[in-house]
Length: 573
Image (cartoon, rainbow, N blue to C red; front, top):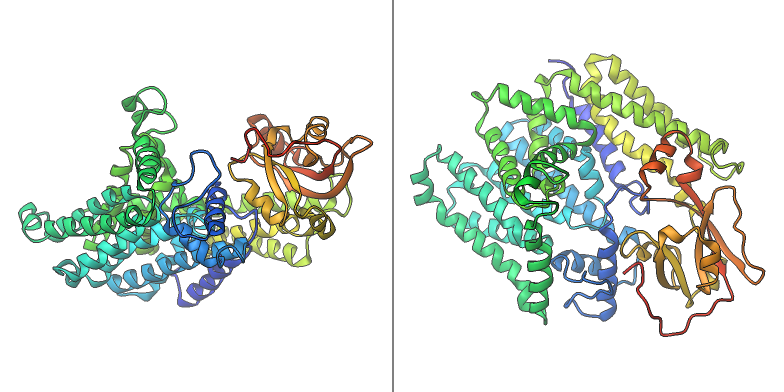
């Protein structure tokens, strides 16, 4: 046994984990998925309509894109849009993630007989990058993972009492699965019911006859009850036919259509192949990907001696993998609900896992921290931006980066602390990433208050590289009436100045925009670009950060006029 996970270590890393998930929660640059923008848009539009249903949207083809539960959550947490902020939208997601970690701790501590192992399982799950990325923003994943996991946690916690329950557990499980379906999609009942059936089959010692007689009706009852909860959407929505067309047929059935050439060919090759599904599912572990691989290898080697609970955890992961390999659109994100199970496998084998996986994690952490330090140092010294003093970090930031790098180095060269510091290093990296972008989240990345007040109530055109990207600008320019144009045109200042009366344009750092005599710069801020081309990414890696990664954005008032009402397609829609 090398470097046992002590109670003191657990408490310290737990405090670090809580801080990590709360730090920068309201940041526009928090790791997330672009779906957050359309979800914000639907919440805002529905709240403005003053009714829970039907869901409202100005986006083409995106209205009933997801069931209403997550949008109702957003309406409630923002007070019908009165407290419109990222913090108000996101804190329920962190609460769901925290509750999932807590119930994972209870279940693992109960069946393993060690609270320490339960805490470790929860911390390992929280250390996964996918948990951090999808478990904080305003997305459907946090409630989906919570409600889907709860019945399986209950089976692991209560064991015989839950498995032999004839009515109480099936009723509670059906309601939980129903809430998950109402958060994400009715399609999740398929892997959930399949996994539950495998759980019962394993509990009955692989006896099909016993499962059919004693448990099959439970799975049917749970499935029917879950779908009944989901059907509430159709009952309450005044336009159920739109829900059927947009969500059932468009959002779900469409995922079985061939995406490249042929369904069977897509299954074994390309970006949507089953191999890519396996890789992206493992990649959900982020910096701990090789630790997860080593744990799965350990499970295979010890397959003849694994406990009942370990076999159930593996069956849960297997069930979801099999089901989500069937649609032609395959993504590791669909397997987020099984990541707590995989984290538990790591926790159960923690003391027996080889050090190589943890050392790889520490090397990856060191590379990331060193890169952030190098980039941050050059930004502060303005070697990239060419404007002295524009990017400023506090001493606290540099102290934190130094301590983080030192701890990671200690983990690399100290076997006794290797595993514990590798786990802590994941959280340190997430904090470092947030801290490195702090200057851009402050005044540097925001317009002056005078500019915001000066354009209140006016039509403003902003660049959009993603649907509903204007929802982010709504946080930057509250009170303005926003419209979108294609982000690829943001540098075409002459074209934009001759087209829009009030427009946000972008220019490389260090290059002032050339504007017409009648034009006026109303406001200025710095922005970090997204969606780079392959050539731009290569240039960034070669050190051309100021040229491609950051831009200055200017609000320009021009003599151009546009007739109202507006015609033409809004790039944000």
